[in-house]
Length: 100
Image 1: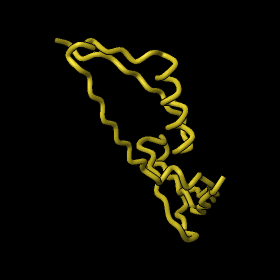
Image 2: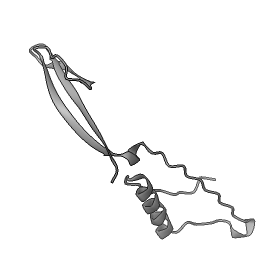
Image 3: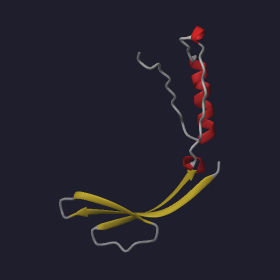
């Protein structure tokens, strides 16, 4: 799988002795940290597919004689599988009829 590698620092901070209002920030370069801050170096790899937006185009025509039309469950699963394979993500596809 084609991956992108990221490396950055996550800096956490608390506010005073009672640890109220904790905050976080992120920076690419190693930061200077204050006494009440802690940093974590993070290395992350994600598939390039996360950044690709598929262009999906469908054209459906239903003749008056054929209405109402139905899409069978196995066809729905096949569509979800194809999308999942194309983008590298899990896809849950729900097809429902619009209310009259």
